[in-house]
Length: 293
Image (tube, rainbow, N blue to C red; front, side, top):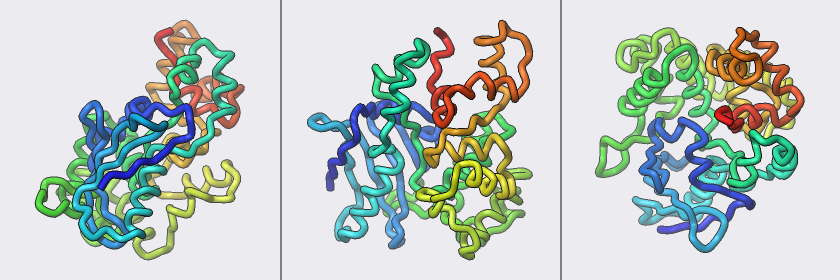
């Protein structure tokens, strides 16, 4: 089955996929042209999709495998998930207007950039973000790959391809298993608690997609999750489409130091101050800044 989904122009499919390292973390895959993903639908059915750039419209084409007998509700769910992942409906007009006056960001407007790839479910994004903090990218890839391989539901006929595990699956195995088999280290405690809270219904992460809360309040709520500090909270906010906060890490300090302070050491506060003029777009300004200019 093939679906065609339109995007609000300007839209650059490749730039969206390449905007974030998530494409390298299962159940995503990327071959240079098509974004693949194994996905478990709310009905329990596991499908495989391949997303590519559309030729005749501004948007994408979605090819669905294991599509026999898909219900209208399941097709609608797939559309919603792809729309959310690629931010097809995002309106970045105000951000583009600001970029026009900044040489280091003109490439954003010219290239139809500005969207950041995210997962279909907030739970997955929170777990992956916890796995990003205080470690190398290679370690992150290992943790997420093992988590999916051991606890994700397999795609029919190809057991090596698995969906991202459900909160219930992660909660059931417990902290010791996550430390021993998935090698999550200290993160096992946070991810176990998070999964149990979501599985029990004590924490509804999906409602955050359309939360009426002000960004500052939403930031506080995210920081109340065990294992989510200031960097992780800012990162998750950006994945939710809230760009007011900038998560500062070693990499950000180095970039800002070299670009704006002639290599002198900088504080987290100084990094924040550099991008403060961008207001509610500060994360995107930092994320897409042309640091080699």
